[in-house]
Length: 355
Image (tube, rainbow, N blue to C red):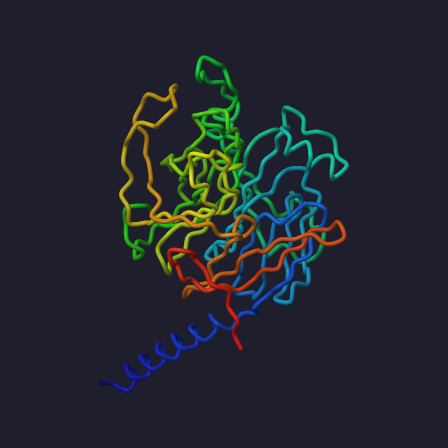
């Protein structure tokens, strides 16, 4: 073995050891302070050693101690879950401008006018985080919007269910959960990457056609038309998938939801999708206006897990930052807490206590 080859092998071994040690060396807890609206999502930046967070009407860039070092504020819309692409150094977020009960509440809390019809829509917000170098950076300086027409069509549609005309096809309330992941039907060595964004689903217990969570799949960087529209029969959930996270360690996508209220379902709050499953084409159950066979995915596990719906971020090597949101003196905050992957029958994660 040559001296150069020995050096390369030693360097690789040192790098692996270094990574494994650092994977366990994050702060156990980072407190992120918000305002009157609660946290929606988190993303950790390993290179800059900082954390990004969405607090519904504001986007924050904080250091490892939770101190805000930059922000984009005054967003009169619903900035939801976020995911960070280290390769392009962009955060992708779901963003809704709508005038239902959620939208009206946001506008009222911000002291803003209700969103005009011409402004309403559903978007992927592509955020250039390296341009956020101070607080209150103007929205238009760092955010590029991509409108999702597929979502708007389902949201605006009226459909016939049980001889009654109801609004919002499939119970679509917009979008929220978002993540970057390889294609389904492959192992984790696959290099292609796609952006997945999930529908919000109204938790109307009187409807029969809203028991699926829906996930759109787009080529990363081209959000014109989804190349896949996946249906996942989870049972009805309250406002659908709140956070969605792909974990390379387990090669699964996790769906964190506000649990549903229909008594015929288990009403879990966290589901897992194995990436190596091959999607199937089948007809939907109890969706009378959809006669075609559609692409479906099956959950491989589910749990009653308290946290995750306001932030779920895999760090690597089975470690996660998970948002534990709360409110104090009328203001929202979140304890971003370190967890270790366990995926037992009773819990997917275990809180870390690292000395």
